[in-house]
Image 1 (tube, rainbow, N blue to C red):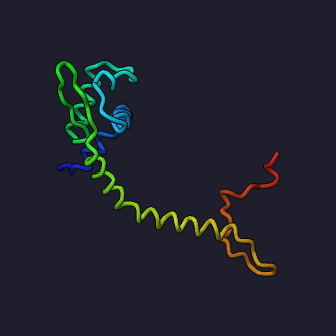
Image 2 (cartoon, rainbow, N blue to C red):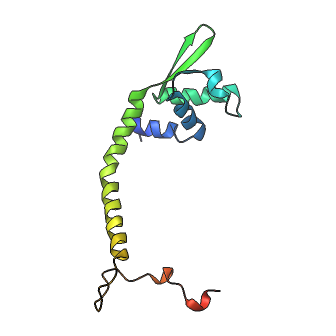
Image 3 (cartoon, one colour):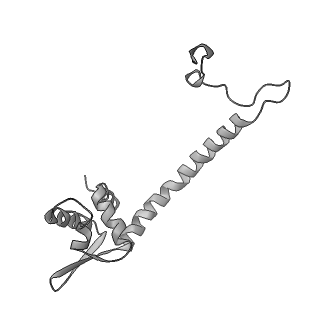
Length: 132
């Protein structure tokens, strides 16, 4: 099974250290030593993380003399945003239905009439004898 680019990006971001590196690079370019400072991992481990991010197209690395700087590639982040944007309409509809259900449950019953709210689930009903 071949992974599409979004899968590669999501896989790269599955690691919390790589997500924090991406967050840091979102503030501006940084050297490899700057990026490794906040982590309790070896320099080779940070280099491996950077390699994963670079292969995913999330960052670029450039050599400047003895220093290597890393920079976030915003277009890769935009690609992920497009993918997430396609999911948003479904989630918006789900949240709208949930909001309507919760509003119906908060609506008081008309005097002398049946309640418009669905009956409470027995899983959420408290037996008064169990309260102490």
